[in-house]
Image (cartoon, rainbow, N blue to C red; front, side):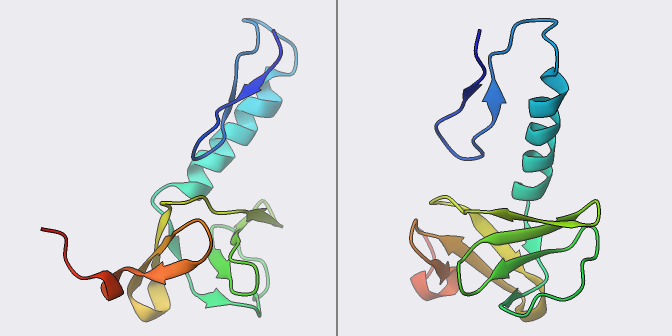
Length: 111
């Protein structure tokens, strides 16, 4: 069976035959995506990314991408509608509406 990708959210891969060779490639990608895109707290929103520091995440202001530093390299992810992040340096929650990052405080309290 060919590997499939979930059509929502994290876009995880699945569907490989039990015992298939190289299953660890997409399994590793899934584990990395889950770690980078869940319970996100980014350092800041910026276009000037600092030197790579494992475990740090940012929002790249010019593109809206999430940038995650892992294993000495930069990983870029396009956000999906409904994704929420906490921005540490300004102590602010943002959500992605499918086009841009918005400040949750601008929308009041849900009742």
